Image 1 (cartoon, helix red, strand yellow):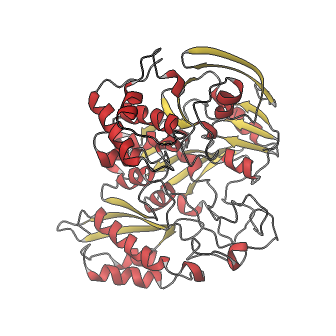
Image 2: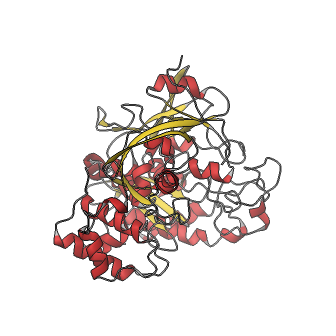
Image 3: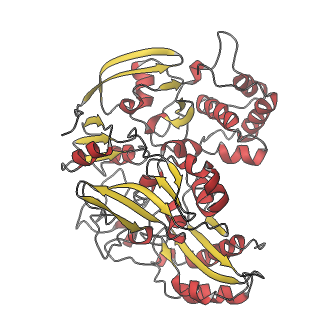
Length: 329
Length: 169
């Protein structure tokens, strides 16, 4: 780790002022940043610790049944919130499956969305071609091990995926991030937060320098929601594929509306919007649900070594949909 | 204008195992784990992977279990840390420590300080009600000797004993 200077902000305005200076990175939970600095993924001159800025960890109801989660709320605190447990089970499950209890006590919900890919070449301790590490150096995964890579939205420059679990749940909840910068702030749909390789490989998100996530907002409650994570071991592992589903059900249990998001298949949570439309009016266990998922997944363009993930994606989405409906998968 | 100053050396004051510790001009890059091991001589918390994957460095920070390798010492300024060295009262071992001995819950012992601290927290959080819950909530502590069945038994036994506590708080 190369030397850096440290400071701790006590207000958000102070932090916004200091982060505008080039070479400054923000420290929240630290579970990603410390490893980035060890690997040389980032080599900042200045680390600004915002973890004690008061009020940014609050979780509070919004008028109309929504919820505002401060960006610095710890993952375990979000999952333990009684409102989240009752009304947003998809988010609670995604958090519980996201990392170890120790990491979830440190990591914040806002910065979880800003984690970087787990592509082994990107995280390599030895220099290997990676356009995200060294622009123009190439993509070692393209010719190498490509079995944990993208089904959607990749280019020859980068075939990586976003590993966040909460991001997938938040995408299926149509959640928004609320940002602040020295010149104002904005609301960004979680589904629009991350950039795909076709947009850029030198940036991960649409956030501008000096723009910080202040909160995440959930709109209406989603009691019929579920998260399924498929991985090589049952706990404390990154996903091969994950799926988040939120449903509204009619009397009698038919699907009135659905939101279906896949994780670890692209550099952003991937909504299956065509399938969401096709399943309206179906019973959750109807074989036509599987057909709708198949049709939507036929749009995928998997990298060769990751084609096996399509079948897992279909199964995970189907299982999440049935679990959300309260039907035994 | 900002009210704080960036510095590559930091002065720290924190409570470790109940004692106030003052450290001056610590390199800003030092992790909490390295502060404990290299600056305070507390080598109970182990450096396994040094990237948050193995849990051998687990300590309590303000009463919550965290990976010491993922916390900057600078960010722990003013906080309360408990390591495995802070669990016993003199010769009187903590109930979780006794349970690990009684259940033979270690072989080489390298992961044990992290396992014990994590177990203390796991019980305190209320996440030790059955075997599946213990396995899930202890999954951040890797044991390369694979003593998992005995570790689960130890956590279960200590939780059942009902006399768990986090000391020095």
